[in-house]
Amino acid sequence: MFDRRTFLKIGAACAAFVAAGARARFAHAALPDDRRFVVLILRGGLDGLAAVPAHGDPDYATLRGALALPKSGTGAPIDLDGFFGLHPSLHNLAEMWGEKELAIFHNVSTPYRDRSHFDAQNVLETGGLSPHRLGDGWLNRALQPLGLDGGSGALAVASSPPLLLDGPARVTSWIPSRMPAADEEFLSRVARLYARDAVFSTALKQGLETRAIAAQATHDVPNAGGNGPYGAVTSLMEGGGKILAAENGPRVGVFDVSGWDTHFNQGAGEGQLARRLAALDEGLAALKTALGPAWKRTVIVAASEFGRTVAVNGTGGTDHGTASIAFVLGGAVTGGTIHADWKGLKSSVLRDGRDLPAVTDTRAIFKGVLADHLGVAKKSLEELIFPDSATAAARKGIIRV
Image (cartoon, rainbow, N blue to C red; front, top):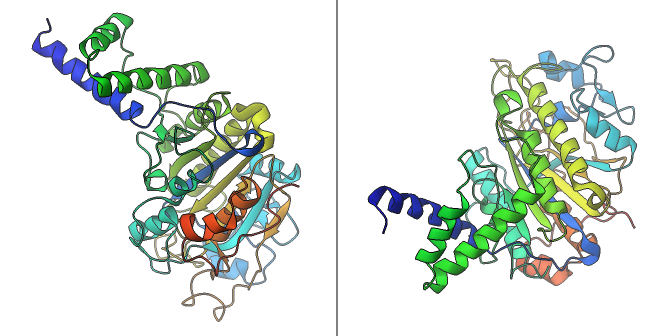
């Protein structure tokens, strides 16, 4: 017999287990050579010209004004090729560049050309031509040709999967719990309560198995709550990386890294954007370490829904723009390269006289990785995963041969 308080406690616990179990337990994936693929959503609109400044462009310093990085000394960009550089906060990414594990795409955008975060993120995550044209996420649709749609071969490091992983294929999610763990006696009671219910007993069993794998992989990962005002980016990437590295863990992962909407007091070499970039940089280094030997077979794509204006606004920030940058990194990447097709910063080149122009379609990058890293057929790419994307041909040369 249970009193009302115990009954409510059981109900809350079972709801959590059902949510995890309904998405299925971790399972071996069918990717070639045990490869991994990770997507980072840089939510909020990353200023690509701040993260990867074109310091060699003759108009850079004038147009960026107070946001321009100095040519030398403290706060200067980390030079990449004499023309482009990395923000000084991105020293770990600079090391990956030197190790040829990082490729950068500049002037990157989805087909979306307006300035709404909500609509732009919808296009980025659904892979459509316009907002709300598709109802599920392109990465969820990709799980079927990858052979991962029958189990949780995909992991969202979040309280619940984002739209990118929403759809018919079952996925799972993980985030460090701030609640005390339920003891074995309590879990045994819950199991007896649902022993005769096939749906709930199966969901509970799968939820417990998922929890056990996550606990084993992340037993020494700090709980969420670090990295200053931006949350535990490093600990989340470390924990998610260990789950992805596990022998029986998922092979596809998604991380949500928000905080890029820098309308005011953006800062140049220092300030809020610099701190945010530093958190991302440390997180990616932690992810690389956590993946261990699996890093050599991993590709990570970090992309934002849109970029920001070239010129500083009246409050020391930047407003919503068009093109940004995408980082493609991992041991399986042909790195040490920057893909820009740079058009310059003259007002005649800028979109609406203020935005970086869109040169590379974000879908082309994702298609290139899916095709050459994971072996997805062109038919699946064009018809299932990214319909109406014939003009965004899969980019070649991203993956090491």
